[in-house]
Image (cartoon, rainbow, N blue to C red; front, side, top):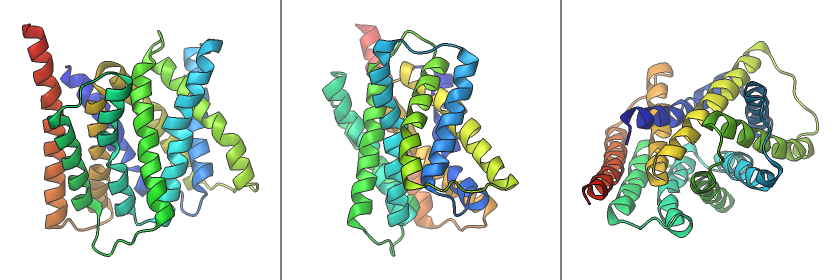
Length: 289
């Protein structure tokens, strides 16, 4: 396992953690569907211009499914969950993704279900819950179902992105998926938001950041990692998203850090270490045979 690959892949969810601050400060009041569309499609088309390679026809159904799972469906359910639930509840529901990945990997990739992997995933959920969940959090049935559906969608996208690896660089694979996800969002957005909003200079700056940095760059790193690392490893890196969101809120918005949050951060990082150590030991054992 390359430490450099692991660190570069971890950079993606760490950057995603900045989305909350960018959205609330530079894109307040805008439709999540419009933001999702303008985050995915311009980035995908820009990358297509760079790689100058279109997918083969027989890959289009797979790319549409991957684009839906990793972007269109995932972001739609994520935003629905975020609107109907407090942020802490939504983030905690999203944290079940590593656990789903463990079992989906066993089903689709014939990866054995190991106790250490399940333990790491459960500790990750507990860590994120302590990090972002508040006692006053309320539950909403539709929001909870949307949150779990979003976690399932992204987990399936992670596993299938590893299972279906086209013979192209990660940059090209990212361009294809982002474009597919963006195109799928076009009819839904036009139906749900028929009157497109006006954008200020601050809005455009926020959209540029979300599309180029939070979209194109991060997903190049994410899919590059998926091509080289165990899916369960990659999914556990998602703890960096709520962790960086909390740290950025503390640094930039003068939010306080409680003892529970620090304990949650420690648990989340321990789950990450446990998950990475499991794969490292397994590979060492395989090399020794």
